[in-house]
Amino acid sequence: MAEENSTVSLQSGLFAAADVLRSKMDANEYKNYLLGTVFYKYLSDQQLYKLAEDAGEDDVTLDKAQKIYEENLEEEDLLEEVKDELGYLIEPEYTYTKILDNANDGSFQLNQLGDAFNKLESQGSSFEGLFDDYDLYSKRLGQNLQKQTDTIAGVIKAIGKLELVKTPGDTLGDAYEYLISQFASESGKKAGEFYTPQEVSELLARLTLVGKDYSSGMSVYDPTMGSGSLLLNFRKYVPNSSRITYYGQEINTSTFNLARMNMILHHVDLANQKLRNGDTLDEDWPAEETTNFDSVVMNPP
Image (cartoon, rainbow, N blue to C red):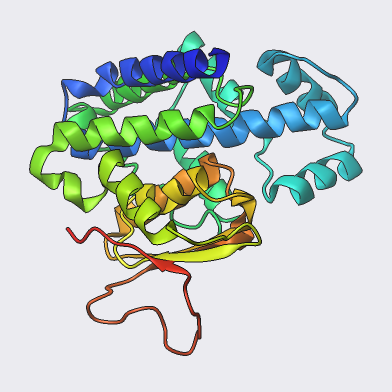
C-alpha cells in the first residue's frame, strides 16, 4: 500500500507540473520538456546521493549532498568511482540542485541548462541526442528570452519539489509511464505514435508467455516500439525480469529517445537494451545480427 501511495503521489506531482506548460502548447509538444526535465533531475539526484554515500554520508538531503560534492572536488578517486558506477558525472555547477537554486534566486539562464544537457550527452552513446527535442528557445515558451527563461524556470521549480530517487520499487518508472499515457490521451489521434494502452500491452505480452518458462532469461522484440511501454510490460510477468533483453526499433527520433529514457527510469541495465532508431518497413532488425527472439510483439501506428 505504501508503494501504491508513493506512486499515486508522484504521478499527481508530475502531472501538476505540466500546468506550467499546458496553456502554451499541446501535449505532444510539452511532453518533451516535462519528461526531459524529470529524466535529468533523476540522473542528477542519483549522482548526488551516490556521491554522498561513497563519501561516508548517509540519509542526506540533496542540498547537503550538493555541498559534499563541492567540498570533494579534489577527491579524484571518489569522483572517478561515482562515474564508473553510474556511467556519467555531472559537474557541480550543472546539477539539478544547483540549477534549481539559480531558478529560485532569479539567476537562472537558459544557456546553463543547455550546457548541462550538452555535457551529459557528450559522455557516451547512452546519452547522445537525448535532449534534441528540448528547444529552450522556442517561441511557444515565450516571445522573448526573458519569458522563455521564466517558463523553463517554472518547470524546473515545479519538478524540483519532487523526490525521484528515494522511491520504493519501480515507483518512478511507473509514474513516468503514467505521464506518457496522460500525454497520449491529451494528444488524441497522435497517441499511436508513442504509446500503447496498458490493457493492450498486457494482453499482447501475456499471450506470448502462455505455456512458456523464461525464468532463465528471454529476449523480446518490438519493431514499432514507440516509448517502450509494450516491451516493459514483460517485466510484470517474467520471473527474474533482470534477465530480459529488450530489442526495439522506432522510426521517430523523438519517440526513440523517449523509449531510451523510459528504459533507464525503469532501471533496465544498459546491457539489456538493444534499441535502434530506424524504419522497420524499410529495414527490419539487421540480418547480420542473428537473433531468435523468444517473443515478438507490436502495435503498428
